[in-house]
Every structure is written in structure tokens, then in C-alpha cells.
Image 1 (cartoon, rainbow, N blue to C red):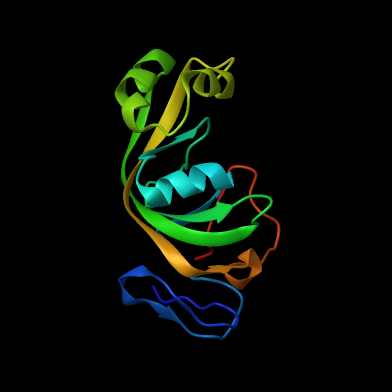
Image 2 (spheres, rainbow, N blue to C red):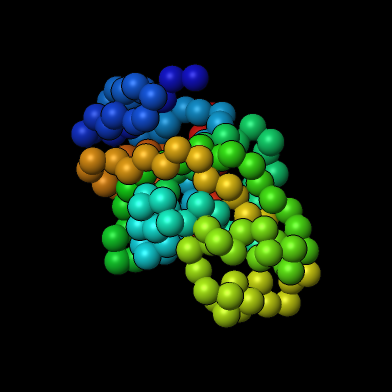
Amino acid sequence: ARGVVKSPSVNFRHGRNYRVIRSVVYTKDSSVLSIKPEFAEKIFSGSKRFEFRRVIFRSTLVTKVVVYASSPIQRVIGEFEIDDILSLQKGQLWHRTKRYSGIQKAFFDQYFRGRTKGFAIKIKSPYRYSTPVRLEHMCETSRPPQSFMYLAD
């Protein structure tokens, strides 16, 4: 599916160049995740290879994550492919991901407090955009998702 982004034109990975027509990116395989800047930096440096979530996508079509770095950056700064999504009990999840979690065990425990199970998105091929993009240049809203949002079809 071809997509479009408001000016300025943005070059996405894999040679996709979205032309200026409307403020909606048309895709069936992408989701925007709000990620704290410190964790987004670790993703693009390669030290964080898992992104943890309490709630995961319902769609099985999502193969790519577009990274929205939350405050104070408040921009889309890159993307990555989904290698796998782990759905495990908390103890098993930490055991399988701790080496490349990019977080401390105390943060993991606090994040999943009150939950018996969690999700970890295994990151593949992270790609940082040369120029950060405002969210409204990629979709119909400037309001970032609490957890995630699908890019419009």
C-alpha cells in the first residue's frame, strides 16, 4: 500500500517515499508506539532489543513499529521491524529478555506490577530518521497514543 505524508516529504526505510497529498499514511502493517526518549535512544543504539508492553496489538498484520519519542522530544524519530512478540509470565519474560532489555529489573517489576503476564516486542532492523517528524505529518492527529495506534489503512 502506498502512503502519503504532509510536507515535508519524508523518506522512510526500504526506499518508500511518501508524496504530499493528505495527512494520512496508508499502510496495513504499521503501528505507532509512544516510547520514552531514553528507551528510544537505546533502541537505535542497539542496546535495547526488546520493547515491553502491558497491552499488545490485536492485529496480526503489524510487522513494523514507528517510534514516537514522547516528551520532551515529541516527534517520530524512526522505525523498526518486529522480529517476534513474546507473551509470557513475568518471570519467564524477564529471564528471556534481560540481557537486551535496556531497563533495570526494578523498572520491569514496577511496569508490570499487578500483571501476571507481559509482552516483549523483539526489535529487528532499527532505523533512525535523519530528521524527526511531527506526528500530524504521519496521521490525522497530533495527539500521541497512550500505548500504540495503528496507522490508517
